Image 1: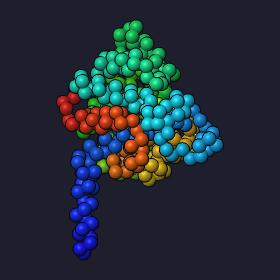
Image 2: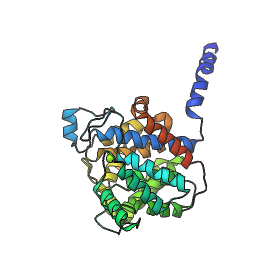
Image 3: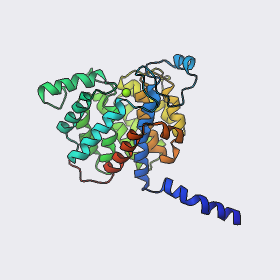
Image 4: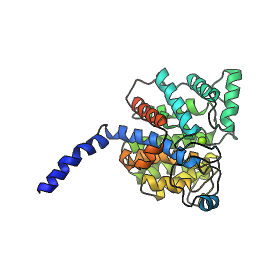
Amino acid sequence: MFWTGELIAKTAPVRRRATSAHPPHIDRGIAAYLGLAIGDALGATVEFLTPNEIRHQIGLHSEITGGGWLRLKAGQVTDDTTMSLALGDSIIASGGVHAKPIAEAFDAWMRAKPVDIGNTVRRNLVTFRKTGNPEAAQSEHDAGNGAAMRVLPVALACYGQPENSSILANHAQAHVTHHNLLSDAACETLIFMVQDFLAGRDPIDVERERVGKLVSAFPVFAYDKRLRENPSGFVVDTLQAVFQSFFATETFEDCLIDVVNRGGDADTTGAIAGMLAGARYGLDSIPKRWLKAVDEKIRSQCEAQALALLSGFSLSI
Ligand SMILES: [Mg+2]
């Protein structure tokens, strides 16, 4: 008894600091943002490789080492994280989710010469510069994953509000570059999933309700047909790979390792899977070696932004 008490007395304060500094939904919101950055940094090393190439060159890819086609420093993130941060900054600065300030924030982000940028993002931001219209024309071709990879600030800012707020807020951010039905459906599904996990909902219910609804509205998203390896930047491919990894694993680490070793658009599958897994499993689930490996400035920006977006500032859509 004595030794048990000693142990608790010595370890409990440490554990309290690590786990209960914030209410659970804030803990999970911070974990979602860190998960996004970790998945981005982990996956970028193997972006555009096939699973076979990864096996031959690395074995199992499970460490944040940088490199890849972008020749990143270890812990450096790509557009998935930096566009999310630009969006979140715009929401916080303008007190709402409005297309014009968001388009301006993305344009400023592009001018700062990001390490990578998607074709659809570039094309529609160049159009915005010319026209001043922050909403891209609807296009069946713009079904890339570029809007889905940056939904997290909207999910956090609209947490606890009616579902329609999230839908409208997402249109404002997504349509700056991706005005497309499949992209919208993917974005909305991801936003509701993050919010469900922040509220502590069971993954089985989340899969049935949110992903089930997506697949019945757009059967092309069905992810039970065949293993989605080497996923492209097509938002359907991306979500199929993410859902297969996310629902077939039971830890943050297993989910991310599974998804990035599928190769293809691995920084984005990693980022989206990391966001969902962070929201589902919480801060304690994130391997310390990955937390330490992510660029320190990015890490603190993610934490601060998650806190600010979840702090219930009055949001106008
Ligand atoms: Mg990227």
